[in-house]
Length: 203
Image (cartoon, rainbow, N blue to C red; front, side, top):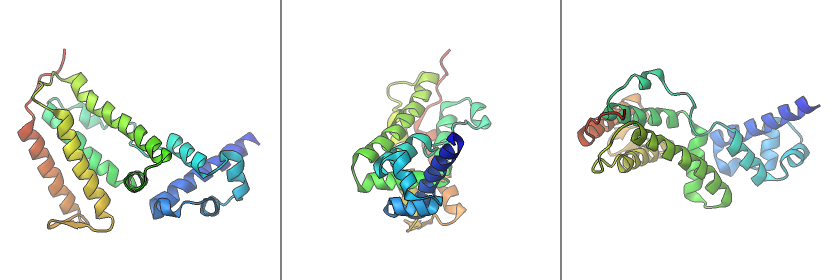
C-alpha cells in the first residue's frame, strides 16, 4: 500500500512538470493535474491538501534547477576566463533544455507570491553557490568583478531564452536555429576573455 501511495504521488508530481512544460502555470489546476496523472482528484487533496502545497512539493522534489553532475571537461580547464565562459555557455544550453525551469522564471516575472518566492529563492541560492565557486578557487582581484559579469551575461542569456519561445528573432539574430545560439556562445566567450584576466588558482 505504501508503494502504491508513493507511486501515485510521483505520478502527480510528474503531471505537474508535464503541464508546466507544455502550457505554463496557467494550465495548472487540480482537475487538469488529475487528468494528466490519471488519478482521482481526491487523491491529490489527500496527499497534498491543496494546490499550493502540491506546487511546493514539486519545487522541493523536482530537478528543475540544473543537473547535479559537472561535465568532466569543465574540471580539465585551468584558467579563470576559460572556466567562466564554459560555465555561462553550459548554463545557456542547460536552461534551453529545461522548459519547466523557464516556466518557473516566467511565472516569477509575472506574479509575486509566496510560492514563486520559494522556488526562485532555491534557484538564487544555487546561483550564488556557483558564483562563490570561482572566488573559492581563484585569487580574484577586487577590480575583477566576476559576480557582476556573471549577472549581466547570465541575465541576458536568460532573457533571450525566455523570449525565443514565442519571438525567436532579436536584433537580426535568429534563435530558432543553432547558428543563432552558436553566435551568442562565441561572443559570450570573447567578452569574458576580454574582461577577465587570467588569475592563479588558490593553493
